[in-house]
Length: 174
Image (cartoon, rainbow, N blue to C red; front, top):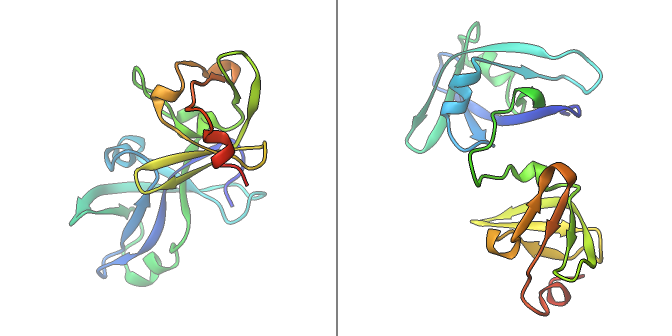
C-alpha cells in the first residue's frame, strides 16, 4: 500500500540470479530514472514509516529492468522484496518536459467541451496496449487520451477543454 504523496517508480517482480538482483516492472519512462534517484522508499503498510533502499545499480537486460540494492546480496533477500512498490516522494518527481503530461496529473481534472459544458471528472486512468483511457465519473465513460482531443489543458487548475469526436462519449459509456 503506497500512502498519498508518494509516487511508484517500479514494482519488484522477482529475483534475477542468485546475487540479490531483482527484475522490476517500470512505471516510469526509463530505467535511467531509478539510477537518478539513488534510493527508493518501500512501505509495509500505509501507516508505518518507509524503509529506504539504496540503489547500487539499475540496468536493462533483454528488455527487462533489473535493479541491485545495497545489502540485498542473496536470492532469499531478493525474494523477500517480491511485489513491493519502489517509491519516491511526489515532491521529488522530475519536472515534465515541454508538451509532456504525467498521467497521474490528469486524475481529478474536469473535462469540458468547447461550449464550456462539463462532461465529467477524470476518476481513473487505464492503459491498454499503447492507448491510455480516462475514466470519467459520468456513466463511467471512457475517453481515449489523445493530445489532439484536448486543445486546452490547464493542469494546475485541473481543467481540460476537449474536442471529442461526435458520439464518442455515448459509445464509450456504460
